[in-house]
Image (cartoon, rainbow, N blue to C red; front, side, top):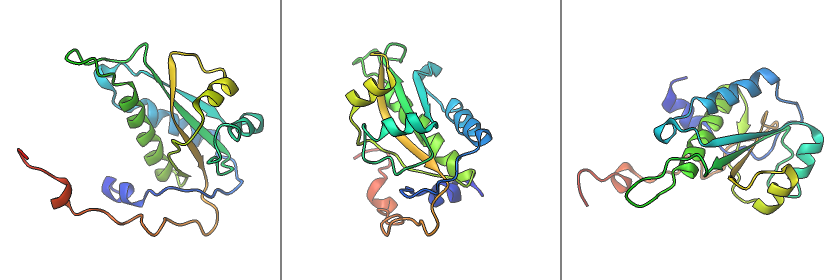
Length: 172
């Protein structure tokens, strides 16, 4: 599958089969995250892997959007090691973490898995549940697994604004 087809095929999976994700596939998801570009290649992120039942149960206290996935990856931004733009101090940590998350989601599709980006979670509860250090900011939770039978994209999945509406050449 070429990249554009892969990108268009990916959709938010919110219903997972109970089948666990094989460790080889978990490793490939993590390698895809590791390959993500980051500002000045500082790689200011950490990934919390939740795959044991006890760890996944704690996630239910942090977000209702866990979807009972057999695996969850939490991407954390490290503000202590991230690149900051000299002109205004803009911190690239969250952008870098978002790129990492995108790599995870696209690799999941390539492996026959599904995922979704969850931004609706209680960061304090997540910090407490998993003992997340202060310098790490939880950016997103990615429930991952095999899509449940009958799972399909939402009706809005293919609705996109035309390029003419989103692309500006050279100036406004």
